[in-house]
Image 1 (cartoon, one colour):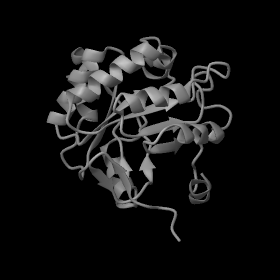
Image 2: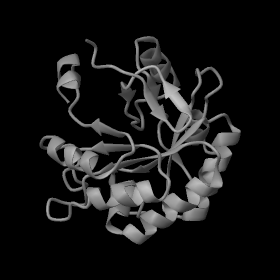
Image 3: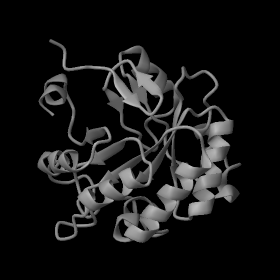
Image 4: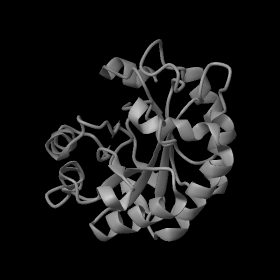
Amino acid sequence: MSLLRPLKIGALEFTNNLVLAPMAGVTDLPFRQLCRKLGAGMTVSEMVASNPRLRDSKKSRQRIQYGKEPQPICVQIVGNDPQQMAEAARYNVAMGAALIDINMGCPAKKVCRKQAGSALLANEPLVQSILETVVASVDVPVTLKIRTGISADQRNAVRIAQIAQDSGIQALAVHGRTRADKFNGYAEYKTIRNICRNVTIPVLANGDIDSPYKAAQV
C-alpha cells in the first residue's frame, strides 16, 4: 500500500502528501514545474521578502513568476513586521497565490540579523502577532515553516506549534533542527513526533529526506 495519500490544507486538496520544501536559490519556477511533473503533490516558492521596498527588485520579480505554474500556487513570505507581512500576503494572493506560507525557519545570517526567519522563534509574542495578523488579512489558507527552536537548550517548537494552531494556521512544516544547528547534525524526528502529538493541524516533516526509502521511513 502506498504511503502517499491526499493532503488537505483548509479548503485546498493536494493529490498527495509529498511536498517540495521551499529553498531560496533552488525552488524557482522551472524546478517547481519539474517536481510537480515528477509527482510532488505540493510545491512552495522561494521565500519572498515582505518589505515593500524590495518588491520591485530583480530578485523579487523573478521569485514571483507564477503565471505558468499549475494551481494551487503556494508562496512563502519572510519578514518580521506583522503589517508588512499581512500586506505581502494580500499582494501575493492578488498575484495568484492560493496559499501563503510564513517562513520562520531560515537560519541564514542575513535573514536572522533582521530578526526574521528562525530568529523569530525567540519572540513568541511577536510570532503570535504575525500569525494572527496574516491569517486575518487573507481568505486563503496560511501555513507556517519553523525549526525546533533557537538552540539545543531553547527548543520551543511545541509551544510555537500550539500558538500557530490557535492563531488559525492550517498546516505546519518543521525542519527538525534548531537555528543554531543550521544544516549540521541530524534531523530530530522525535521532536517532530512530539509536535504531532500536541496539535491537530497537519504537520509536515522536513530535513534529511533524501531518498524514497527515507521518505517512507519518516
